[in-house]
Image 1 (cartoon, helix red, strand yellow):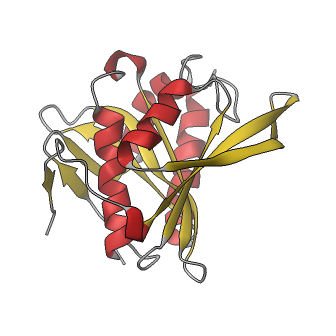
Image 2: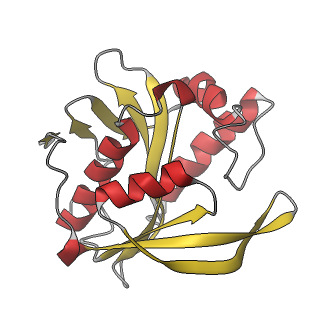
Length: 194
């Protein structure tokens, strides 16, 4: 299956390429973006290039997918989103996303996540039709929690010290979305890419 391009009224979600290295470096070198991430802020452009290769390898191996989030009007990369892992046999996936701070609070992440969730539950991706999507947030990441709740995820509990990065353990709040419970956000207009 070729890499799927998805669209919303304001965004195009497509594959990351080497040409995105500078934009990805800008994103992941920002301390506020990686505050709750399991990686340190980037200090070298080569780290962005390696991350692009890692994300694209994940898709080639059919173990997950990561899209570039681009503004339709300018083609500018403003973030990424996708499924860090998926399991076609168990029909589930784990979601992830990030966005440049100057675009926070404008609904772009919600719009992008809503679109990829719809694609996953519709069976439009190489993993097949999923039944469950999980999102984990580090305690205190209220913006990420809010995004998941807007899309329809339900809080399922805290997994104590289930993450370890930046030399410390992290409690993770687990959110789940089941296909049968999913309903579209009414204020987001989706354009299906055919």
